[in-house]
Structure formats: structure tokens, C-alpha cells
Amino acid sequence: MSEGQKFQLGTIGALSLSVVSSVSIVICNKALISTLGFTFATTLTSWHLLVTFCSLHVALWMKMFEHKPFDPRAVMGFGILNGISIGLLNLSLGFNSVGFYQMTKLAIIPCTVLLETLFFRKKFSRKIQFSLTILLLGVGIATVTDLQLNMLGSVLSLLAVITTCVAQIMTNTIQKKFKVSSTQLLYQSCPYQAITLFVTGPFLDGLLTNQNVFAFKYTSQVVFFIVLSCMISVSVNFSTFLVIGKTSPVTYQVLGHLKTCLVLAFGYVLLKDPFNWRNILGIMVAVIGMVVYSYFCSVETQQKASETSTQLPQMKEGEKDPLIAAENGSGVLSDGGAGVQKTTAPVWNSNKDFQA
Image 1 (cartoon, rainbow, N blue to C red):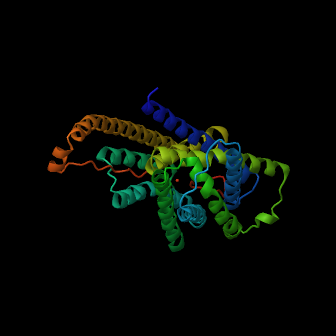
Image 2: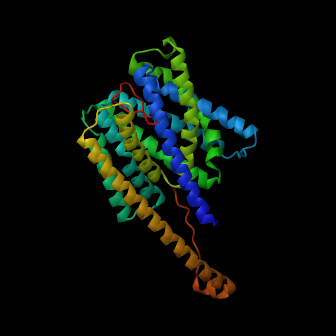
């Protein structure tokens, strides 16, 4: 099996793991929050990250991956920024309507495209832009309802979008710059994310729910679903870093909207959530956008691979006669392409979704 085929299989595996684990944790968290009344989303996320770090530490002890230290300031800044982005997303949902929060999530893709274009000189073809427009239109039809605006909620949403985009771009950039795997990056950044949310979580949850997480009555059923949610979160967090590392932040956001559509469908089938023609139409349009996006990405990847293979013989010919190469001033410039939640959206009632 060639390296290209192995990479494609690895990417498909990462995408599949991300979808399955994310939909599973959404169903688990809906039962935990909507049915059992455990509404402390930010605190729960901090527990997710603590369990993820402990699991990775055990995996490191079993020598399942190699610890590779790198720039501690980059790790700390990245971890804290990730934690802040999660907290801001929670606050955004708490101070805005569900419809405006869905618009906030939709804004992450164009914002990511804009940042990568401005700061990384990454080019997105018109075909890719067209497919993303179809996708966003479909998700908007399926999920966006009311759009009630307020100044504080709008500012929080803007900050949430910017921090989430930067954190996801950093996930891809750090992995490529320091040549670390998704597991190595997640292991080193998890403590900073967990501490950030562990300290701020009870305060944010108290502000949004008017309840105290430490005064909540923890029944055996609540504890069971919390433990199950934490166990699934290990797979969610790992697959998030894996997907962004193997693809790009934009592809990860496209995948996130696929999860949203699947959650809507599963909610209707399993939880009997309300479903209407707008949901069905929006999901169909979004799926078309995802298929078109995947097709154009595959075509462009194959074109780049063929261009690279045709350039290699020319490079070798140039290397045979360095004098001619020097006289012509020829050279090769390689540009490393820049590519997480992880957004976590909390739930305070059954009509709001919880995306890990």
C-alpha cells in the first residue's frame, strides 16, 4: 500500500472517529442535561479534559506514543486560548438566542477562510467557496430560527468566533511547525485547557444557570452519565486534533456541520425532538454542499499531487548541472500549507444542542 493510500485511509478513519464519537457524546449529554438536569456545561468540559489528560498519561506510560516536548510558551498560549474559546462559546449561547448562536457557529468557517487568506496566503478556489456557501446555506435553513440581538451577546459571539478560529488554525500550524502528532500536542496542551476551564467553569455555569455545581444532587444515574460522557470525550478530543492535523480547520468546521445535521436527525429518531420541513430541506442542502466540497477537495488534492510528481524529474535534471541552475537563477520554494471544541456548546434546555 502506497503512502498516499495510507494517508487517505488515515484521514477517513479520523473523520469517521470524529463523527461517531461526537454524535455519541451529544446523545449522552442531552440525556445528562435535558433529562437529569445537570446544566453545568463548562465544568463538565473541564472534567472531560482532565480525564483525557489522565488517559493520555496512561497511554504514555504504556509507551503507546512518544512524549516530544517543544516550545512551552506556544503550548501554554495554545492551551489557554482553547480554554478561553470554549468559555466564550458557552457565554455566547447563554446571552444570545439559539438562532443567533447558530449564526455564530456558521460565522466560524468564513472567518477561518479570511484569516488563512490574510495571514497564511492560503488560496481557496471559487469551487471550494461555492461549495462552502451551499453548506452554510443548508445549515442555516436547518438550524437558524430567531435572531434576537443584544450588545453584550454580540460582543461575546464575536470574541468566541475569533478565538475559536485562531485556536483551530494554531492546532494545524503547531503540528506542522514543530512536527508533533495530534496525540503529542493534545497531551501537552490538555492541562492548560483543563485548568483554565476548571477555574472559570463553576463561575460561568453559576452566572448562566443561577445554580451551584457543588450543591447539585449527584445521584448514581447522574454520576454514570458523567463518567460515560468523560470516557467518550477522550475519543472526541483526540479525533478533533487528529482531523485538524490531517486536513485543515475549514474541513473540520465542515465536518462539525455534518455532525449538527446528524444530531438533528438522531434527535428526531431517538429523542422525538420536533422536526419540520425546514430541518429536512436544510439537511439535504447541507449534505449536497458537503459532497460538493469533498469532491472539489479531492480533485484539487489529486491535481497538486500530479503537479508535484511532474516537477520532481525537472528538479533532478536541474541538480545534475548546478552551474546552469545558478546562471538561470532557478530555485525551489516550498510553502507549508496551514490548516480545533474543540468547540463545546452547552445545553440549558432540550431545544439547544450540545456539540463536543
